[in-house]
Image (cartoon, rainbow, N blue to C red; front, top):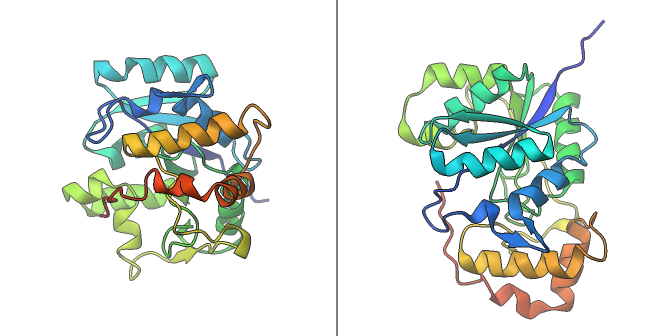
Length: 247
């Protein structure tokens, strides 16, 4: 008999973002962005829980309070060693499979989370994501791997980049780990769209999306987002000038 693996989404979130401090608690449609994100992730059918992985900084107390209010887990760890923070968050909650997300993705579509989890469970690979070859919009980023794999990574590297970017070592070493990319269907293949929360311009766009769609249908997904943008193409100009930081 195969035991069911315990699957949690981790959300990396902190208040001291260099480009837009406090962004995860900035409000749209009457709620903080992180609250929207937790609500959306909680609709994924394949998850057993959610844990917010924040820091021990006093400035992140409001994040802990929000997580407590919403009834999801919260773990506080190092600001710079994000890999260690996520690994400890998983171990503290007895997690077998980690679905790694970041607070930059408040518009994340829960159906895509289920898609990536099912692919991970159905295939004998170490890592599944929809970002190895970008076809989905930026801001729909999902990475799935086991806690054991992340523990193995933690033993192998102490490089600052690897410790800051949780999954970096995994997908940069395909000779060690087996990888699978999930491509977007034609409906969702809009790699040109930036739906991430990184700058003030990004927030301006995401606020409009939430305020247009959320009051009508709080369960809106990527289909509705793309339809809104296609009917209002000038929306993409709001953050089209933003230069993205790539590892």
